[in-house]
Amino acid sequence: MHKQQLIDTAHALVADDKGLLAMDESTPTCHKRFDKLGIPQTEEYRFAYRELIATTPGLSDSISGAILYDETIRQSTSDGIPIVNVLQNSGIIPGIKVDAGAKDLAGHPGEKVTEGLDGLRDRLAEYSQLGARFAKWRAVITIGPGLPTPGCYAANAHALARYAALCQEAGLVPIVEPEVLMNGDHSLARCFQVTEDALRAVFRQLYLQRVLLEGMILKPNMVVPGLDCPIQESVEEVAAATIECFQHSVPAAVPGVAFLSGGQSSELASARLNAMNVKYQSQVPWALSFSFARAIQQPAMELWAGKGENTKAAQKALYHRARCNREARRGEYDPQIDAVDAP
Image (cartoon, rainbow, N blue to C red; front, side, top):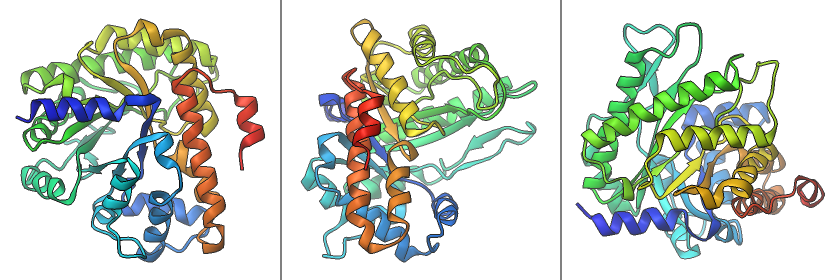
């Protein structure tokens, strides 16, 4: 196992108050977002949008690593430069999404398990040759009446751990993503309990599969009330609940916790991350970072709208949101300044 290489890459992904940009949306997900904005749902437009992201000037000021989709890691820019090389040359570490998506979990109505372990060893070797230095696998946990079940926790934790072990065998840092979904009317306390149970199940399996904790990054949800819950706690209360939950369940050996945004607005995701770093940064053993997709990309996608003449404005918006999250990592994010500075 490439122990020191894994440790060095994991630390580089959360160094200098930077975070990850998830630009690994599957084709159906990308098309769904394009459709809402009237952008043609074609490979040409997917490429144009991802090229826009990868070539944003100064993006590496705030972004340490970019998670790519299979299609993107094989593409080159309009100038003929591989997108992986564009990222590397700007100081951004290339990564790759390797799961095959969440499918219905047999015998468990309303629950999912992520597939993609078959053939993963060979795919990881290929991605390493293509320039990837880390990978990502997302599991989803749904809260509902009688959900999640022990079987759902167990199936997803085991898959995440086997994926992580295969990544490390190939010299790639695994981003381990157990996401408790925000959908529903559950309370903050219910999300706390489910998140804690999910994390404990995942780390139990990571231990059994001999995953090097120092050579991985955790990508979890924040502890938040459901989107339809009538009580929406303050930014500070969410930060406190999240940190308490993670102190119960995340080993100190893990270098970084890179939160997903999970459907939060751009500004709210930044504000909650900021609140954690303001109060708890010196009290926890892991870097409190970010691995956002929509919370960084959405304003840029809306400005771009599939039109080449909007590329520079969209890149400016992308740079701005990335910078806001670097400020949040430092505990220096100000929503009022964000509103004034936003493109």
